[in-house]
Image (cartoon, rainbow, N blue to C red; front, side):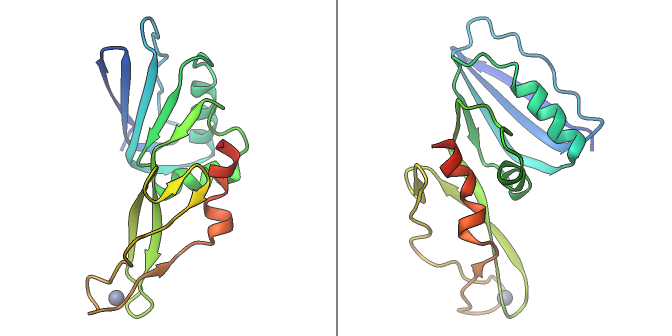
Length: 161
Ligand SMILES: [Zn+2]
């Protein structure tokens, strides 16, 4: 699926929602900032990012004025992996409002991504984690275990702090 960008403006807040894959076919439109005072980017439906996608994302976001805060919502694991791998993947003025964290079941290997939200599951780079453990939808009472190393997966928050 070619990347789609859905754009809405509410007051001075520009909201962007991406759907699809960040790859060589992803066309990121230059933004007309005009009266925009803040950008909110929803990444829930981003399926994958390859090296071309990484390059276009960095090129595109680096043109954002430094005075305009960027808030990122619902970053999927594919995006978090790039955040941890690539220095400067997001501009300095980026705040991470929520992102997905992978868990899995030891018995049936099914996996589940759960959303961590700023102010609830983490504050700044301090991770509070889940208040109640996740259980497997297929295996009764089986608690899902983290499919990540905390030191690695949450490293981008420290960098952004
Ligand atoms: Zn299970």
